[in-house]
Length: 386
Ligand code: PMP
Ligand code: GLN
Image (tube, rainbow, N blue to C red; front, side, top):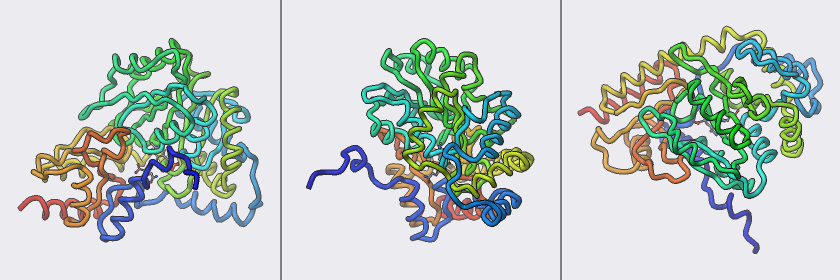
């Protein structure tokens, strides 16, 4: 038999699925895969019901229903002063995952170089490679994950088609600051390159730090593709409703990929997300404050137990080095060990590197009810602190 595609068949099952299966098998407290256990506003859930009963359940327009595209444009304007034409510059996708795939397929030609930061979200490199990109990895280093400017500049060349970046960033919790963004913008202009900006955690930033979309910087309006996710903004990760904002020439070609990948996204969910973006701003802007408290609570608890906890400015993930606890083994060993022996599941950060040689950090997801976080800390304390 002829082999299937060699790039995809070279990958195993995604770490998120693997760790959640293990958590279910051992009935643990699952702080591995990122999903909140308190779900978004009732009015948004109710709108799915209303939309299903009162509106057609047939194919909506390929770019998304006008109500949601207008809501995304309105959200861009309210939060970032970014004025876009909802008809030519906004498209709804089936989650940010599809938005990323469509943007990659639309922009990358085989042989193009694409710059990405490590550690990274696990779909980036497989999808880039499948599109024929030559991936140029630039590593951010713990604990502060600062931008290594010289290395980043060296990763760009005349063949660079784009940078694929994620701010706020999973798994590091880093927020790219205005100087980082200006530096990246300068490189994009110098090398005539684009940016795919994964901004799914735009509303989950702590300590009063603002989110700045790269597309709002001078010269970036024609180069940056901005991606958001209702799953993250409304804490309903099963919904898979994403949105892309980009200049018409970029959005036009991204929509060609979208039309052949999924064509469209469930209309009832789109209508509910439109309602949420327009009417539940108080809910999704309050979320960061609640998560900030959870971050502090978990970070303090883990530090007391003896973990070396890295700073976390955003998202719902924090990283910790377990070596001070005396555990000898890789992060994958550690995650299996605490799942099976302590009843708490966490994620090995090495799974979020293209070359998994950083293998002493684990990621904790803290978008959980306080009693769940307390339960996890109690179990870890009982296990590690004799
Ligand atoms: N990008 C990043 C950085 C993520 O953490 C996630 C998590 N789900 C996604 C994209 C995918 O978002 P969605 O569920 O909307 O597809
Ligand atoms: N984004 C989530 C995480 O990083 C989960 C994504 C997924 O399960 N595919 O944990």
